[in-house]
Length: 241
Image (cartoon, rainbow, N blue to C red):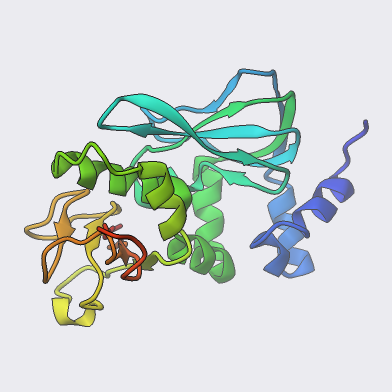
């Protein structure tokens, strides 16, 4: 199959949030992408280092893995299909967290991490999308750390993360002082990355009530949180960039 700049640009026009770009901006962004092919079983990303590129799955299928800190075993979170964007989460958080492996021979559009971050500075629609989006792997990572901290070995981490995905929110906190009363009180807020919040470490939780798996949170610079009452014992989170 032949790939041209026009076919790549047409494909990007179907991928959120790149479909929000103007034709001129889309053409400029297209220039930065390269095509890479991955064999079955080849790693696209590994969780022990920050991504050096962001990839958009063009053809094939990629398995997104999470690691439960209570067992140190991998869990398949999603079988990603064309249009899925891989690598942005770690860059936005400033913390590596993604493991992605080709489960079929796959082709990705890839852009270097530095170019991706530069594009975010130029394109407000892209930065708004990525800064305010809470990803499944981020939720899984933060909830797993909180359950591990609580020595809770019985909760189904994957089920909780999937359930929380539609309810979690992100709070990007600017430098300086932010009154905690600006945060929704019925959520538990977990620090996700992107910067330092005084008196709170990465993956730590801020709560104004005992932790219940039914209360959720969002991210500093970046905190994240989810809505309450989605489980019998709930777990919200907060992240910060």
